[in-house]
Length: 102
Ligand SMILES: [Zn+2]
Image (cartoon, rainbow, N blue to C red; front, side, top):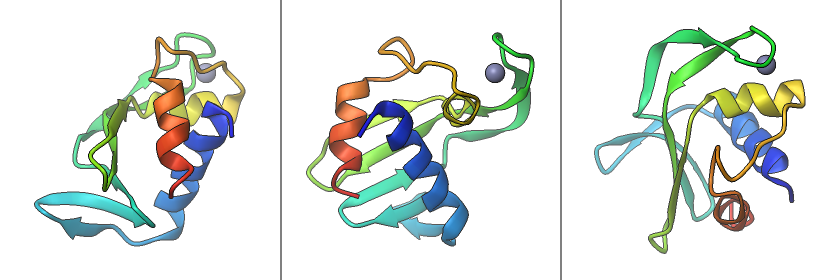
């Protein structure tokens, strides 16, 4: 799985399920992974690469074993548009490791 695959998997989960509340957080569960969308903000910003509008705030991916990784929702756009996702955007290795258990 590439970081782009992991981001696309998260986007698909968020689209296909209903948000749930869990331990004061809201988001989506898949297997041992909870995708916390409480940090999403209203509003959009233009992509610095292509100008498309992207979401704001943060998404936190939490594994039941305690590992967490956070990323900006602009990465949903990056994955769709084919922009590269690098370690400056997210801890790629950790993201892929956690999402392999989702
Ligand atoms: Zn773009």
